[in-house]
Amino acid sequence: MQTTTLSYSNLHNHGELFANVFRARKQSFIIQKNWDLPQTDDMEFDQYDTPMSRWVAIHELGRVYAGVRLTPSTARCGMYTYMIKDAQSGLLGGSIPTDLLDAEAPVDPGTWEASRLFVDHDTPQSKRRHVHRHLVTEMTASARALGATRLVALVAATWPRWLLPTGLDAQAMGRVMWIDDGYFQCVSINLATKMH
Image (cartoon, rainbow, N blue to C red):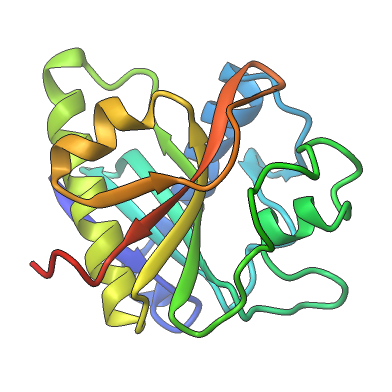
């Protein structure tokens, strides 16, 4: 199993991997979860897939098992910044509640957002824990390499079950809320406390 962090500046070195991440996102979010998201050429994307972001992929022999997008909290592209902040500001049309955080969404160079986190639904149970571990390890290593000391994420409310066993210092940043097909919650992951 391989871990790769993609950017617009290195995607040409990885063949179809970048497109395969977006194909896997379509499978996870549009087909499996039935979310109403933009898509084209069998790929899911949104306004946050800009050159400012990075994409972590866990893959093997062309198959993407898991992925996550990393976006700096200082990002700005037109009227958009990053998903959690834009949701709080009401820019997402209410698809995510505006009261998702207990405080103002952070904007600082050391804070990055982790979004579009997925594990392919066809990943065998025997591999799933291994895939999760690789995803969290690569996500945190990539974020640290980008200068992040904290990640913020809107994830399934079951996050303590799969995130805390990795040894990361993660805490809730807001209430548990129902969005589309499940319960979600914003979390803050302190990357400064456990350096690998």
